[in-house]
Length: 217
Ligand code: SAM
Image (cartoon, rainbow, N blue to C red; front, side, top):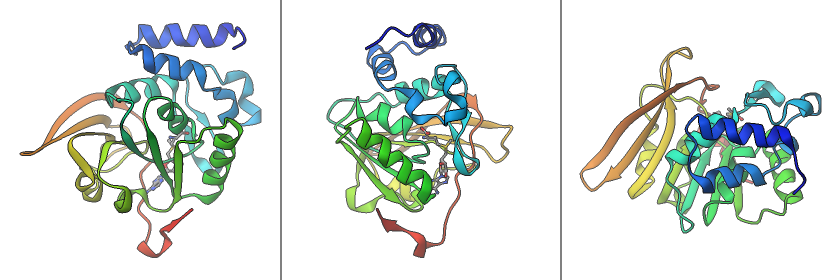
């Protein structure tokens, strides 16, 4: 790996801001964020900021990626569902920390670009799907971990909580107003869901599509 002072600065900033899990920091270090960022923003790839990608969407801020990944408490054996592939960056980071990532995106051009990046990086443990991620991926459920990278309403989609394994963790930004969103962690026990509000955040909205648009990639 070549020495990149911007990357080192970013990793130190993430650590200072609460990303203390060394496995998460190592995964962020190893995934070349510049590959996921549009040409026009190449010089900002290692800044701690969200950046625009195509179709009005964003690649998340590295701090948010780090904190949400850490909040999942991933183990190497886990199957993880991500809703909102976007650039594919978050899925690539997750792929270094668990057995397999299933990631769903509703916008075909974004998904195809992300798939190209996974091929370029020779990442073999990410499976993609084009469709409405609020319905989850029933054929692959239950999931040990679910991460949603777009902001839902006041409550998480029922299909997602239904597809969470007992003992599983769902991390999702929630809020009815885009100025008032919070990352929320749910743990599923035999008795039900235990909710824990984490920190404020600002994400693009989680949109639901009609059922007929769901298809496997
Ligand atoms: N994880 C992404 C990354 O690393 O670049 C960032 C995700 S971006 C903030 C949110 C993404 O969620 C967008 O690409 C958007 O199209 C997608 N999205 C919104 N609603 C969705 C849904 N119901 N199902 C699947 N994807 C959805």
